[in-house]
Image (tube, helix red, strand yellow):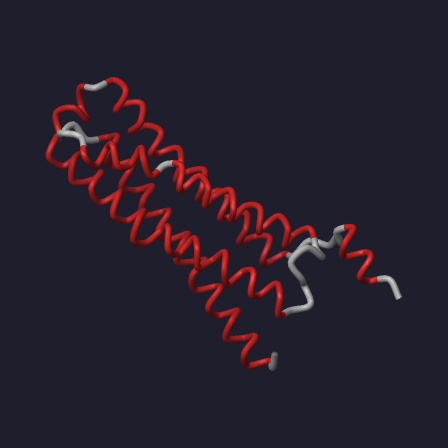
Amino acid sequence: MDAAARRTALSLHVAVSVGWLGAVLALLSLAAAAVSTHDPVRLHALYLSLDLGTRWAALPLCVAALLTGLLQSWITPWGVLRHWWVVAKLTITVLAGVLLLAHLPVLAALASASPEALLEDPTLRRSRVQMVLAPGAASLALGAATALSVFKPRGLTPRGRKAARP
């Protein structure tokens, strides 16, 4: 693949990855606002927004980041499994995606609950706290993936060492 195509693919990967991080930070702010409010109507609106933002922004950007990251690995010398930093980024992306999928049912329950139940039901109160912790952890993980992309720490995997031998 020529240099222009590689730069285009890299630009796309950076755009969707930064978009995903931005979506997660926006979800974190909505979840924090939801935990701190005592207004049942506002609370219900926040969880509807969280559910929509997760399904229509964070999840598609997660998938796009994974696919464009794999594309980047295949079309550059970094390779998918040659360098530890690439393996770490792939692991972070997959785990963050699984975490996102695992929280969809919780979000759906919060979004469909009555405004009064959101304030009174102790199970839903625990879920409300969980909805702050999940995007908080995801934002830290995606920040770490971003740092790995910038610093690219040295270290070949066994597969990378084998491919590097003459």
